[in-house]
Amino acid sequence: MTVNSSYEQCTLVNKALIFDMELTATKLSALFPDMEQALKDAILKEGIIKTVKEGDLLVSSGQYIKSAMLVIDGLVKVSREDEDGKEFLMYYLEPGSACALSLLCAARSEKSAISAKAVSNATIITVPFVLTETWQTRYRTWHEFVVATYRKRFEELLITLDSVAFKSMDERLVFYLKRQMKVSGKLLAISHQEIANDLSTAREVVSRLLKKLEQSGAIVLSRNHIEIINLDKIFD
Amino acid sequence: MTVNSSYEQCTLVNKALIFDMELTATKLSALFPDMEQALKDAILKEGIIKTVKEGDLLVSSGQYIKSAMLVIDGLVKVSREDEDGKEFLMYYLEPGSACALSLLCAARSEKSAISAKAVSNATIITVPFVLTETWQTRYRTWHEFVVATYRKRFEELLITLDSVAFKSMDERLVFYLKRQMKVSGKLLAISHQEIANDLSTAREVVSRLLKKLEQSGAIVLSRNHIEIINLDKIFD
DNA sequence: TTGCCAGAGTGATTATTGTCACTGAAGTCG
DNA sequence: CGACTTCAGTGACAATAATCACTCTGGCAA
Image (cartoon, rainbow over all chains, first blue to last red; front, side):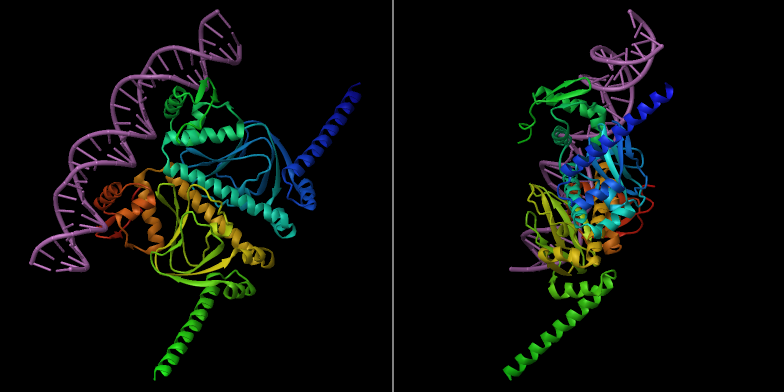
């Protein structure tokens, strides 16, 4: 009886795993249409599939990165942190994208560093650098993928830099909300404190500015939620 | 007589050009030791050598970039500009380095854009993208060079972002002066207005903060010049 | 020499952002 | 159902930076 039950459970787990593998393979194909088949096979064969829960830390600040990271499902937030724990949103990784830093292996330990955190339950594939290095020459489409990723992250970083360098806090907040909307839709489940962290400012500042936006009719506020009505009319 | 003189001039010019080519070839070898010989030959054969004067604009804001840019001699400043002309120093290109953006061909026309300016008389080599694209597969060392460049620029951009996001103006100014010292030595020939532009702030702010630094003994100010004495004791 | 001008110094004022201190309000868990 | 915790709102104030309005100065050109 006990044995039987255990056996049944085991087959169930196997089935689930196989199903998961097949699902991942399908998703991989859909998400990275430009990759040659041999490369996709290699990713599935050599990569480690990880499912992580909302809030999990994938890369913590100061840690050495030794694997490339591909996002299959869910949303991953990449931030920069300084010595005294202040953080700063760099960009989001959506399914089909990779962390440029994990590709760069830029892990020279500096004063401030990178952290990656799952915003929702997520599935990611990690591939050790020793392998991806050889892929650079073996698979043309991997090389292209790396360069394309580089470019995209570089551009995003530039846009982020722009908004910090040239814009005031109210503009940056609107910019932030728009970006959030792109990745999470019109109803944001986020606290003022989190927004303040992402913008590297104080909660009170965010609260005040959000209140102003609500009064202008651009958003509706409620506890732990922000509903975006229309941000387009704000600032040209 | 006239013919003779003209002939002489011509040979002199040729000699000068050949000398220049040889000099450039020597410098190229010294500056890019990791490149295979065939690649260096290709660069010299296909690249266009340009000598530019101090203050010349190599890439102007909003313009499409269609060549890779290698710096052989001199110093090039890469800045970001926004819609209303405010600018912002991203990083310097020293001899032996390339512009990541020119490698990325990130020239999707955005609201704000990049400008590159010669800070001193400079020699650069430009190679059209159509060629560098093929080099990616033909020369392994070119590919490595591109990736290394990417990485370096990405890191520099992150450090710049850090200083904007986390530091106050006085710290940023010290950071800026240190960076200047690295590329130009202890005696900087620069006006307060230029510094203000690079930091995207107002001249008065820079003047005031510089005065404070002078009073603390870190620098000595004179018209159009700043002599750096010791910046290390400022901020930890 | 004189006049001009860009660069630099400075005070006064305003705007923006950060900090402190506190009050409610909305869950949530025993 | 309280007791507790987290989140949000707000006034008061401080600190930083931007802006305005000047003056002063050194160097250069007519």
